[in-house]
Length: 169
Ligand code: S3P
Image 1 (cartoon, helix red, strand yellow):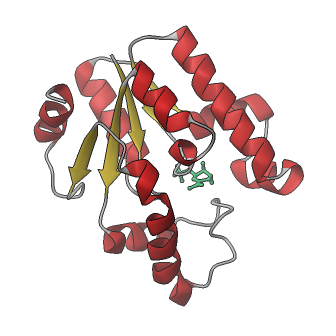
Image 2 (cartoon, helix red, strand yellow; image 1 turned 30 degrees about the horizontal axis):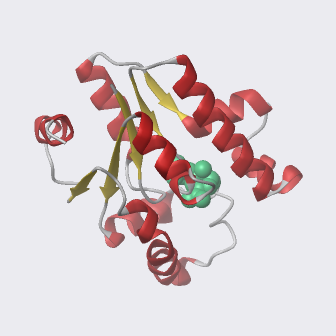
């Protein structure tokens, strides 16, 4: 079983991915981390040196490589992964796509603390961040909504509920 976790930056994809993988005894992969390892530089540096288009292509290729290599795993995607090329269709074809529909206020609090390494946010002022998240989330919602499973209230669901929801998709 392949499980793709999607959702906005700060939604908790990596956190949940690691825990669910651990509990289900499945390998865990973080798409961003794999790209960083392949390129030998941070996501921020890839954006600066090579541009977003280059990153999006690397992201798509890494996704395809993983799917070809393993048929059982949990993949934490980048926030933009489902929104480029036909990645969302690709993921749905080869696994279960789970959207962590985390509340904007929860995302905001997380991103206020840890956004410097996120190139799409580094120039946004703290006071503009909430509106930026809302706008971007609305742009991306049409992709996220295509997930097979939608997890609301990510910050208050238990691990067992999470796994049961995914398994009954
Ligand atoms: C991005 C999200 C990031 C990373 C890159 C672009 C996006 O991943 O892939 O900075 O477009 O939302 P996280 O969602 O893991 O922060």
